[in-house]
Length: 134
Image (cartoon, rainbow, N blue to C red; front, side, top):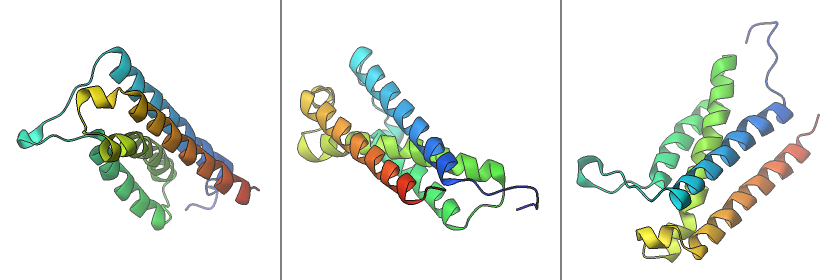
């Protein structure tokens, strides 16, 4: 990192993850409940946004593990963790506790599970922010 550049603070990291995570969750759920469930079938295989979330979170976490020197990469990797994390947390209950139909996705169980897991993610971020306060 250049001499005049400071690493991101815990507060900055908190907001760079939290806001994209909440925005992604609200946008996904709003679209699915108000518009309709739409699936992606690359190569004829159903791909849920859970898998897209994993494909976002893992590389971003690997980048963060090596403490990126570029401020743009440092910020972008945190934003991507928030977006991918929302996608993963949103579908856990849906994929594990239902038959994974379109109707199940917009069911009260799926929504409640998604809210529960997103809330747990937010709580974890708050705890980590509190433990790393400046």
